[in-house]
Image 1 (tube, rainbow, N blue to C red):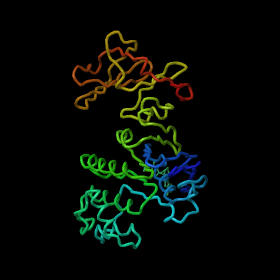
Image 2: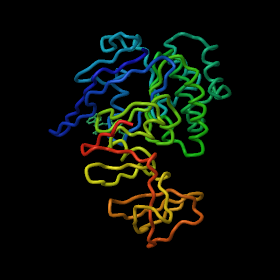
Image 3: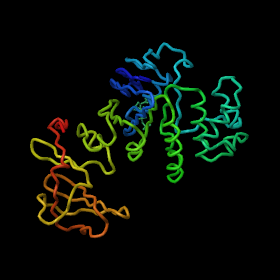
Image 4: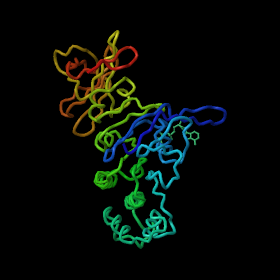
Length: 324
Ligand code: ATP
């Protein structure tokens, strides 16, 4: 096991108020495995990465790197590298000098050149960060992290400040690069699409706790509880009151057709171009159906929804999913 978090708990005290940033977080990540952590703002994601990197101390619990307690290790033995949302390069140094920092005095131009080349910035080694594009600077941050020869690579929303077209291009570079990395990767994101594609496993973190950790598609198809269902997906799963239970169904699985068993009225239609989201008020709660933009009903229309049984998920009164 490359890295493990064991019951990590961390509180912050601000103006007399106690905030729980981590509440008993445990998981482990193997070599060559990529764990994505998705959660809303304030969930504790950055705090978790900072504790794993040794930049912050937990109040309780432990971080293990290669089965050794990392808390007592000097930072250089911990071998955890972190790439933040901001590049963190020294503006007055060239790219070559910035990368050399990761080698801690070892003058190894071959390694610097190879890392820069692998990330497509080999031609820019004499430039200063101000002369590079935002995407090149983020790739330089990744190159610098990799040159420190980490066992664990932490990515804290490294693409969040890039404009959308550049983001998908740099994401491909990051993914290709991190999948050839032999250690463990923990990648924090806000982006739900990225959460489905960037990792082998997905952990959904809300309120300082990991509420579900599983294969991304499994989390999407079978949320473990209504908190995950209500959060994950854009838009998230529909949750309908069914007396003793809550029923969950993804918008793309709702059918609006004659003979549907759940009647309602269309309250809004939002087109995404190819598709439309049709919001329907029903006696069991609001329902969103995703359907092709051609042929959507108009706002105010009476419709009947079909909820195919194979796509319906059931949650008990405490919000816990029935076993699938
Ligand atoms: P975001 O997605 O917005 O970056 P996050 O999931 O990374 O959020 P954290 O930044 O880890 O969340 O914050 C978790 C909680 O801890 C929040 O309530 C935050 O206000 C609080 N917190 C984090 N750092 C500090 C600090 N240095 N002092 C006081 N409170 C803090």
